[in-house]
Length: 321
Image (cartoon, rainbow, N blue to C red; front, side, top):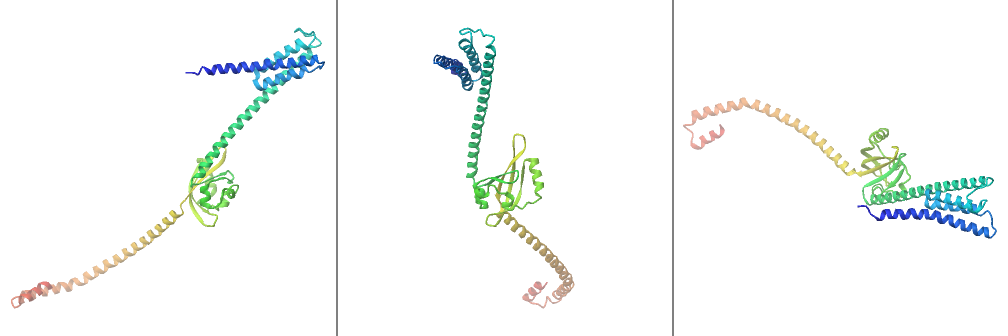
C-alpha cells in the first residue's frame, strides 16, 4: 500500500515553492514602493530581478515563471505610465520588453546555475560515497595477509596492502609510485608482451613469477592478474595477488632430484640383475654336467655297496644324492 503522507508532502512542497514566488515579488514590490516614497527612484528594476533570481534559485523553473509574470504585472501597474493600469504607453513598451527579457535571462541563468550546482553536489556526494566504499574495501584488503597490490596500465603501483609489505619488505609509502617490475625485479617465464596480450584478451592472467624482496632474497610466487576497465572499456588498472610458493618449489625440486636418483639406481639395479642372471645361467650350465656325473656315480655306489654299508653310511649316501 502507498503511503498517504507522500502525496501530501508533495503538495506542501509545491505550495511552498509557488508561495516563495509570491512572497519574493511582494517583498520586492514593498521595498520598491517604500523607496519611491523616500524619493529613491529606479530601484524597482533590480529588486524585481532579485526576486526572480531568488525564486528560480530556491524553487525552480515553474515558480520562476510565476515570479516573472507577477514582477512584470507589478512593474507595469505601479511603475510604468500610466500608473495603476495594465496599459503600457508606446514609449514605455521597449523599456517594459527589456525588463521582461532581462527577467527571463536572469531566471534562465539562475535556473542553469542551480542545476549545475545540484549536479556538482550530486557528483560530489557520489564521489564521497565511492571514496568511502573504496576506503572500506582498502581497509578490508589491508586486513588480509595475502599479497595484494594494484598498478596502473604503466605498471606504477597505486595500492600496496599489508600482505605485500610482509612478503616483500617494502612499506606502502616506499612502494606506491614505483614501477612494480623494476622494484621487484620480476623474472617472467615468457616475454612480457605475450602476458600483456593474454591479459588484454581475457582480462586475467595466471602464472609463476620470480621476484626479489627488499633484503635481496628471491621468492617464487603464484601470481594472478585481473584487468579493470572503465565504462568505455579502456584498461585503467591491474590488480595482482601473489602467493609465496618458494618452499613448495624447493620441495618439488628435491622430489625431482630424488626421483632422478631413484631412476638412476633402478637402472643400475636392472643392469646388476641382468649380470646376475647371466652369471647364474653360466654357473648352472657349467655345473650341470659334473653334477649329473656325480649323481650317477653316487647312485651306482648306493646300488653296489648298500649291502655292506651300515645305517649311518646309507643315510650319508642319501644326503649326498
